[in-house]
Amino acid sequence: MNPDAVFKAYDIRGRTDTGELDAKLFELIGGALVELLATDSVAIGRDCRETSSPFATALAAGVTAAGADVIDLGEVPTDAVYYYSGAHEVPGAVITASHNPPNYNGLKLCGPGAAPIGADTGLADIKEMVQSGARFRAGLVGKTRTVDVVDAYVDHLFSIVPPETIDPLNVAVDGGNGMAGVAVEKVFGRVDANLTGLYLEPDGRFPNHPADPLVEENLADLKRLMGDGVYDLGVAFDGDADRAFFLDDRAEPLSGSTVTSLIARRMLEKHPGGRVVHNLITSKSVPEIVVENGGEPIRTRVGHSFIKQVMAESGAIFGGEHSGHYYFKANFRADSGMLAMLVLLSVLSEEGRPLSEVRLDVERYAASGELNYEVSDPRDAIALVEDAFDGFDSDHLDGLTVETGAGWFNLRPSNTEPLLRLNVEAKTETEVQVIVSDVERVLGGAR
Image 1 (cartoon, rainbow, N blue to C red):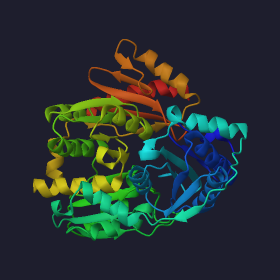
Image 2 (cartoon, rainbow, N blue to C red):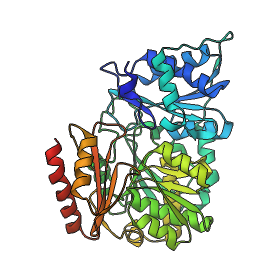
Image 3 (cartoon, rainbow, N blue to C red):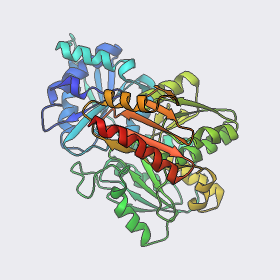
């Protein structure tokens, strides 16, 4: 157990094979969560990793020992836990490591109403309690009850996107052997769209490919499937299904910025003048399109707890991240890959054009994608880059963002892995590569 290594900016994440995460830690967190929120119940869900069930048992033991009841939601998508938390005004906890390999696990927490719990909103307090070794014991031990949440969760999705707004489109879905498979067939059972599924059986070993569709090689099987038929949309979910990645009718991936722009346009049609939150590494086209459609863009840091907090403070109708997280006010400001898929299907149904054409409405710039670098000291490396680009406009909202004139880049430490992440955007691919090369040249002296 190593709290310093696993408590991140907006969740808890670490390895299970090295002792970073163990059952004792989860039990301590359970008690600390009850103490922090002074709650009488906690909803607990989990993904399908081999360690998730014992960690859920340990977390529940800490919760009940502290006198609160446990609502056991079982193996479900992360956003199903957010739904339950929002609909029933109870704190939620999801044991998951999302897209990380099988030897990782973690924990995402939210307060009543799916309110985010990150480093600035309670996670640091929980860490402090855990490090003190405090065990919270109540006179009356809480009870555990099991709730099947999936049907109500699906009903909730369709209360936001009515099934009749979706035409009989052909959709290929790669569940990645993660938690999307728990709900996706029930979702398609309610619409006219036709589902062809791939790896929908939850299996925490992720035997077919890693559950990280942000890595393009993990989309290879979905692309092959789409190449063997005629599909309007391809969808790949990450391990806990809070993120979805999309491919057009030509099996070409869409960036998170493209999807954010398309969904933002749709949301602003229904909520004129609304605010849309986007993180600082989405394309410049996102705020441009929000403004063009009568909305107000709000720029924020990377990370789900930050996005949700800003949405709550601003009353934003929608939020999007380049990493494939999409947040909806109507979904208790929580992210949902399944809901993003339904909105995109509704957009395609209304447009009556293939996605390969629709995407061109919002794609205006060339981008590098997210590039990762290992350096000995991330803070020193960022300082070196800042010195090298002295004289250009910059800010430190999250890492370092620099406007070069030809384009912009953001360099920031990962919140979940020991890496520096670089995102670059410019008008042309050539200009993107020039900026990437300039930054890499500086980073080369920091390794």
